[in-house]
Amino acid sequence: MTKNRLFTTVLFAILLAILPACGDDNDPATDNSPASDETATADDIVADEIADIDTAEPLPEYPQETPTSNQVDDIAANITFFDHENVEWTLGHFYKKKKLIWLIFSAYDCPYCNVEKSDLPELYKKEYIDGGLEIIFIENGLLSGPQPSKEPEKLNNMRNAMIDGYGDKAKFIYGYLKTDMQATMGKYIMAGYPTNALIDATSMKILNYFEGWDSSLSDNQEHAIQFWLDEL
Image (cartoon, rainbow, N blue to C red; front, side, top):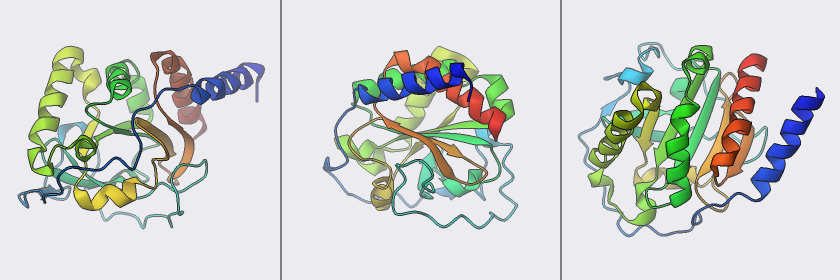
């Protein structure tokens, strides 16, 4: 490891230790009403920002998961989520189709989550996308009370507002969870939101994990993206 990379790694670790985060994984949902069954699957519809994934191909067998998904070298739990068009996706749809996945669990009412959301477009650069990066930004609407039936309209409105403000740089993946995915999400979250995991999409191993966000972390996260896209 070069001196510059060692310095970046140490600085990154220090910042992680002081990052602010919202809430915790035990916050109750106020409504567990089931969502509408009028959903599509990834085999039926391909959203525009993931059109390069051929869903006609059978998915490769997903690696055996570890008990947690919050430690380096854990295998990321194969969570199911629904996008802004109510299309059902799994993390497995990106396995061996991308190089690097930045998976984020967020909450609508978390101020640190909203700061991170506004910072993402500057990190979702074309050269990183072309190099194999995908950002999957999942809003856990159940955390603060909204019913699943209010999705995906709420998520779609948020996505449209982001694109209006930031253009194509905001066209990363937006998702939401249904009630039966809360337990799987719990494998990722230790204390609060936002929760961030960089995942090697060629093996689904966790490369980097942290909770909380501050804009000062953007440069270090970009260095991490650059490093892993070169390494994988």
